[in-house]
Each structure stands twice: as structure tokens, then as C-alpha cells.
Image (cartoon, rainbow, N blue to C red; front, side, top):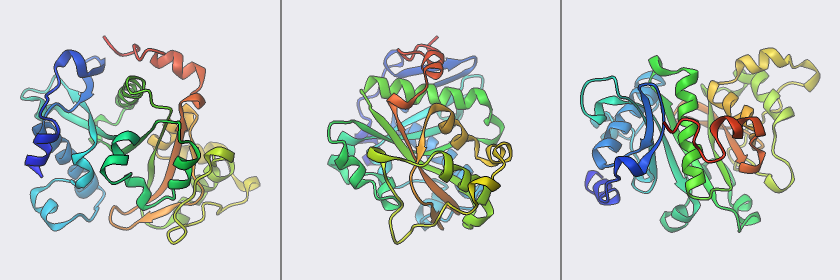
Length: 282
């Protein structure tokens, strides 16, 4: 896979063309070469396998890398702590994997399609440019508001650059028992579920209901506190969630599909991040 990754990123990006944001000593940009992608896979391994106890293929586990075939076709958004001594590979503290529809159409589709019936959603919007967000993770000591904002700045700048109309991707709850997240899942079901033209559901054979509590029994403050930070961040931006959850036994998570049309992003967040992605550019 290393040789294939090197071919994928052979046209290394210059610092001036791929820098997407900066906050203090933290910067966000795209991976420039196969070595940086390998380092991002090592960060993913630390979070998904060592921390969350995900089960991955034996070869990947032996190499201590979370890696799959989608890594060959995705762009890899990085957050680096430039105060760490060493090469850029030593400075990577967070990552996102980005896959545009024009690329997915040529390379086997979207990762999310293994859990959610996104085909009908894409067919309903043939003129829209979709982007999938995946494999989001941040090392524990960097899980702060500042890091999350910088990741979103990178996503936003990348989306603007490529004229993206809508983003989607899996948001995860820890564990494989949806009922343990009854309050949060029910809150999402009753307040954020997709409607009309954005309708999308979990694959029928994987569908697990999110409607686990009646709406009148939901304490909104407690429900918000029970949401994973990433999903809460999506919600604040104006995202919706697909119908039904999916249990991912390999990664030991309960997944929901996040759907975020660009037009849904609230004005105050557009102003904050910058309509031209300039909020954290310097």
C-alpha cells in the first residue's frame, strides 16, 4: 500500500498551496506525501485500536496502522502541533479523511455506503457535489475546542476550494449497544432527523432504531451533554441525521449518518469561519 500511496501523492503540495488554517502552534493542511499519510494512520491506530479497541485486519494490526483501500483515494486533512520537535510526521495530532463524489465515482464509491443507503440520496441530487468526511480522530491530550475548530476550518476551506454543496459521514457513539445511548439517540431522532429531499436511512439489514424514548421524556440539557463532541459540533453547524443507527462491531461503535448541506450552515458560523475560509488563515 505504501507504493500506491506514494503514487497517489507524488505531486507533493507546496506549503503555500495546502495550508488551510492556523491557531497558535496548531496548523491544519492536507498530507503532502505517503509518509505523512502513514503517520496519520498511526494516529488513527492509537485512537481506534489502542484506545477504542477496534478490530482491524491482522496485517494492519501488526504494522500498528489503521489503513484500508479508501486511504489510496482520499485526501487526508491533518492537524499538526508545530511546537513538537521533529519532522511533520512527528507533529500530527489529528486527522480527517476527505472523499469527494467526483473521486468516489471513479474509485468504487463511498465508505458510508457500507452502512447507509446513500445511493438514493445521491441520485436525488445529481447536480450537487458531495463530500464524505471520515476517520476523524484527535489524540486525547488535544481534544479541545481549539483543535475541533481547526479541523472544521480545514474542512470548510477544502469544501470551498472544491465547490462542495453538501457533506456527510458517520458520527459515532462508543459501544455496540444503542440502548445505552437511548437519551442522545432519541434526541437526535426527534430533533435532527433528515426530511424530504435529504431523506436517507441505514441499510435495512443493519437498521437499529433511534426512537428509544418518547419526545416528552427527553431532558434536552442532559441529551446535549450525552452527545459525543463531534456530533454536537455537527448539530451546531446545522446538520441533520439519517434515519436509523448502525452497529459497527469491528470498531465497537454505534454509528449515525450526519448530513450537512452547505446551505444549512447558520450565518453566525459562516461569519465565524469566514465566507472565504479566512478565519484561521493567518
